[in-house]
Image (cartoon, rainbow, N blue to C red):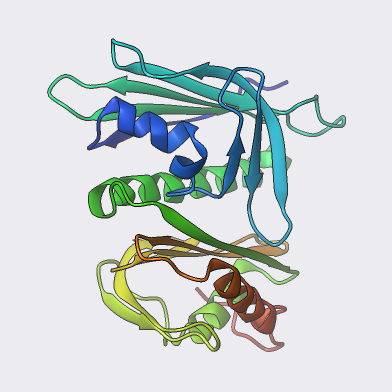
Length: 265
């Protein structure tokens, strides 16, 4: 097994106890990641729902709520070692309060396999976690204390991300890749319009922050492409089930990518 690890330090303008709630409890994780089931104890089960029937489950290996010194630890891994030739991922979140205020989360994902065949998977996790942790920062900055309702949908196409993105932009009513910090109005065919500020713009993800929540679209892969549309609605209730159906139908309409789409990004 490789010693290859993915490590990130996330500085947050929140107390350690608030951060612990966000990274280790069901309602907290839903505000920035995906819906979870969490048995709050070491040895308990953790389950994740990425949408469209894609779910994972594992065992909590560390459950240490924030103590008097402002530190806590939450970790989980697979129930059993995966089949031969597959990575055995483990995830760890270390919470530490800072002098003068604020909190740092030290995140470590281990279990990656060596070799060029796995570089793409490593890069995909890296890009994905960067967006999710940006969600966490944005939650504390703009929606702190509000519960989230999740709309999570996924799709797949044999085309590449380079050919998928122009189709997604068009499906969102955009003429092309928007600038970070610009104000846009998304007009998808089906779900209602979304007006907000572009707060994420990378090769893999487009993110818009509206007055009601966070809206994330992803397309990753050079040999087949996974596509996602994740939404976090805060405060005022929405019909999450109906919106999930609408966004899944939107993905289905635009995948597979029509023949002749330009291979540009």
